[in-house]
Length: 140
Image 1 (cartoon, helix red, strand yellow):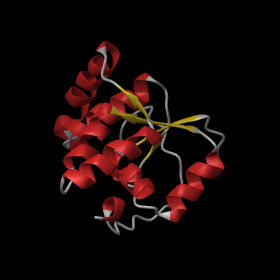
Image 2 (image 1 turned 45 degrees about the horizontal axis):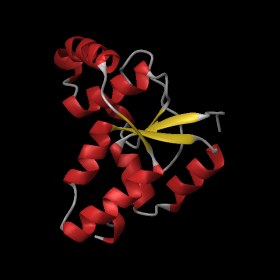
Image 3 (image 1 turned 180 degrees about the horizontal axis):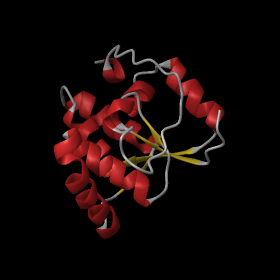
Image 4 (image 1 turned 180 degrees about the vertical axis):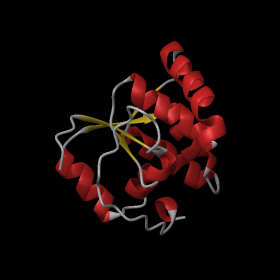
């Protein structure tokens, strides 16, 4: 395992942590790193709420992560990524914002969807071996 002091977590990996995928939890515990998420991932997690109870649990669990808001540097990097990778890779808007945050703050990105990011120059993707379980997000 690499020695990462700070990691940004993609939405899918955050779901694995919040769904108690023990492989994901073990990885972040062993890494002993500060965990961050983009405000875009926060929005995606909130968007996944099934009802008010689920929403309240999501809002409580998001506190496990430090949320990084969008700023002018992230926006500039986002625009560069969109211009560079829209035609060649059809980069998604959310993925571009998350990647831009990772690059701007020089944070390795934990994701189970590496194919969404491997082509992005300069991005660091730690190898973790976590297999998505998708057993229900926070019990729902």
